Length: 231
Image 1 (spheres, rainbow, N blue to C red):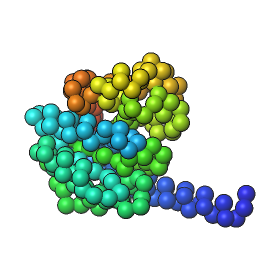
Image 2 (cartoon, helix red, strand yellow):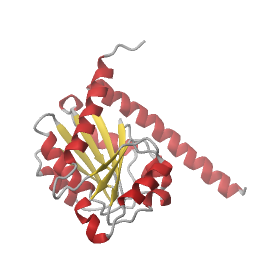
Image 3 (tube, helix red, strand yellow):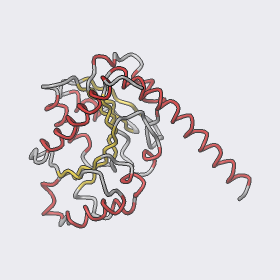
């Protein structure tokens, strides 16, 4: 191993260690405030914003929902999500292909977490970089669009392996694009045997109730744990 290679590894480990420490502090803050945090990951164009817009609109009837939206540039997605009526803030990362814990912390600095029940972090569209960065989330959800191809889980195993749930999106396009759902689910199971797989369409709202029920279960679980005294 060359000195340069060794030094790059040391720098990367240092960055990740610092991120993990900040993420742990964030997770403690979220837990103390009773906020369930969902980190949404996908490739560009997989339908994160469409799914999130529908989700926020439906969940706002029963709880306080907010979203942080990561993108390289523009505030287009934040303006779309704000139509739901929830609290939304855009994070423009410039040339960074992922969000990090300190970025999330800075953009939450003036938010009262006690006024939020469910917080979504829409990560930058990328199936590589975000997988290695903990943001203090309670659960990590990865989206796979029917228009992307069934082999994405095998091409990006680290991302799909860390998912607490995998959402198949744009199911209304499955037949026109020739999406093989059985093959896709087999590939997901090859890298992540346990995560639930939920098929959805934000356009037709198919599968959204199953997705919302899963979210409600996560919120109930964390609410129950928060009320349990630590040993």
